[in-house]
Image 1 (cartoon, rainbow, N blue to C red):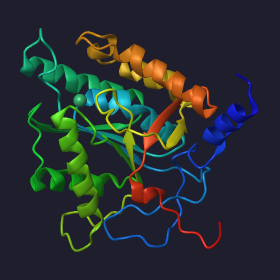
Image 2: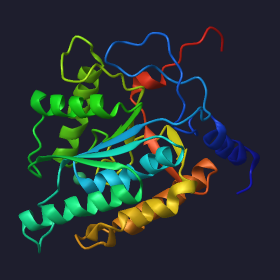
Image 3: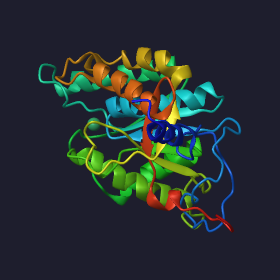
Length: 275
Ligand SMILES: [Zn+2]
């Protein structure tokens, strides 16, 4: 398997524009108000960068999006996990009210372990509305936390709450960046938006960014263990899946452990004067 073309393939994956630290920040031409700028032209860390994971449910926030958040905090940035719902209907043996409270406690414990904040909007599990009210509630939290980077769901999901979260975040990022949208906090432009790899959001997911999470692999897994569902108690082996996914993505990217992310198409557009 040590064929030259395979080696160069892996080298391209590992060292090209798609393998980098999320700390990259540089001003871009052609940025529209309320939209993230187009693609970065560099790929190396330039300093601490705040990050926010916005998920339908706490498990998605920590299992699928927790690696990038843990890494940015490790690099000196601030991290926040926002769950639109507590995922209170996710247990077949524990009543929603009690399970919701367990989910909240687990998220708070996991966030604390990663030196990040946990926020909740408490929309009913399975019934997260795709409304402007929700988008403005998320917009307000984006303006409060001022993340340079947001990680959220990809729209190709069989779960309706995940699809709703994708739409809500898209609109919330738009509203947050528009100065003409008057809220308590001033406008804030999110520089990068990424979609997380999630077993429930696999339709059409195409990784374009490989993030080295090796420095935070162990603490991230320990934080996830705050959730009973991490150990497979709701039927899916989250621990095995996300742990082995990070190993597999690491193999492809030349890192020990990695998380694969997907960008909105406009974020991959490059502005160059020569090729
Ligand atoms: Zn979910």
